[in-house]
Image (cartoon, rainbow over all chains, first blue to last red; front, top):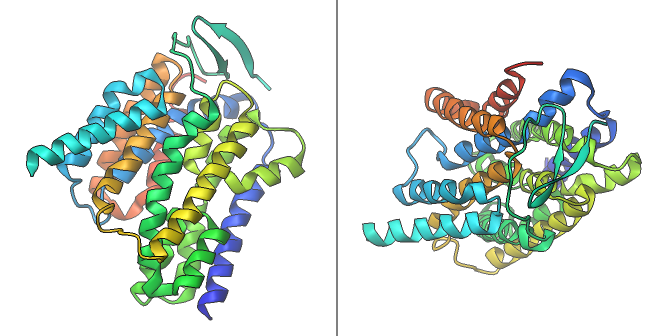
Length: 99
Length: 237
């Protein structure tokens, strides 16, 4: 299979995985609606941990951990911009201290 | 549908069945302001992807892969497997497994999206983790936030890829990039944690995911999504 065909196939799989649930899934009802309503915050918290841990089970860098701690401090403000700025500030501060 | 809007002190906030006792929150940002950090982070990863993809795919196909796929997880996985000499079938299977995470994302968005399937199909192109979070946290029209945030993210991803292909310095960006997505997801968790009980669930999901990934690193994103679903299922019906 050529690389062009492979990219096309991966694109088709990804597109289908987006369109199918968006079009076919009904509006959740009953217990499923309750679970779905509870899902976003745990989902993003789990993804935060997933993206923090480098592949292969290695430990994250200290500046990255400080960035996450700084982000956690301001997360209750519910502003993504402030959270990202705090995280980057924490990262740069930790990197500067370690340098 | 179970969606109810009410004025919660400072801020209009959506509730769903299971969202108990929303707390008072500061005002939400406009969709563009909220989407800007997401677009910047995605653009940075686009530069890194573009630079990494050139030796494997060539410049032209690297750019087209971002135009046609628009999924950092799928594209980085494809690159890694191709660079390791994996057969095409393994690449397709791996990206298909990664794509399963679109199901819970679509599920959580579904109550806030238009009834017309054709409109939802058009919006599905912008279904990524970050835009889902923005759309869920937005006080206004979720479909508008998804489209606007998605368009900004897509432009940043394709543009960042082009910069990386053209010789953008990925080495200087990689260390900061390691911290960008965890911070973004912390922000999205904060934006979607509308009550004390959801904060507790978020913390529990983070701890359980950490333990799971330390014990079984290979389970990756499927494990993280599975933990989140189990935590959401726990408690009273």
